[in-house]
Length: 366
Image 1 (cartoon, one colour):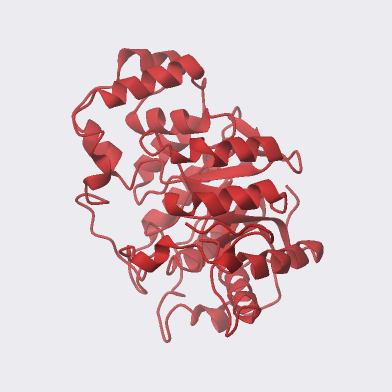
Image 2 (image 1 turned 120 degrees about the horizontal axis):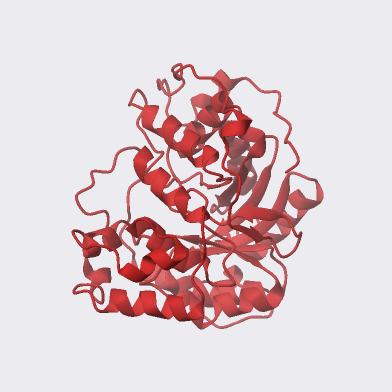
């Protein structure tokens, strides 16, 4: 990947954007850069259809996991990033809505000396003072560059298709200027999949990001097929169903057939099922535990399940009590979330995708 220039700005000048007077800019633990010879070699790679660029099929998310209150302990974040990189990971997903996550990614990628090697996926989800106003999105983008300590980003998604008809042309302008390399749309719920599909079919985007797991397979109905047909890369979120899949299999051994594809733990079982779908480019699981990162990134090694094995894995999960009712379970069981960002309850108004959030010429509203 081509190294990105570091913008000539003062680190201190923008850390206050997270919280006025915060201590988030406190010195990070001293550590040398990751030795290149220690980085994992053989990895499962996927190709970005529009450019042919290969990326590792397992990335890293940062919602909740990298969002730490100012002055809070951050050593685990640095170790997670170190293990992620040494295990062969490169794709990192974040957002301005993830609290302090952008700042922490920028801090530790710089300390570890890996910033230029990471493929950063980010989002814009703000609208302006009127429907055609892109000024707030521009401000959000500039803030993200500062927090991440980057001169440009690899992909930026319009999140929740917020004012997409205005934002997509804006992102195209940034792409022409070399400020971003790819553009896309994203959504965190199935209610937005119709709009995602229409943007994919319109041929105006390079990436789409959506939730997909062995339990939540709604994306298979239209979005993934459309992405494959149109040559659009797919980033998938929530492969562990906000930790609920682990609760379902708690205390259960892996099925014996998992050894056939080199699966060593349940995390790899769930991740390999996801990335073996031919339309998936990269899955971005998130964790607060360095040991769990080691398990996650291990899914980059070994074989992937074929169609028959995927069906067998799904049948195994469907036979486990509680799997069918997983969506009714509270997310993040037994976890106390820290930081600025918090899960939000969906409001009825979110169930309607506005006309201006769809490609020009599409009128269906859900």
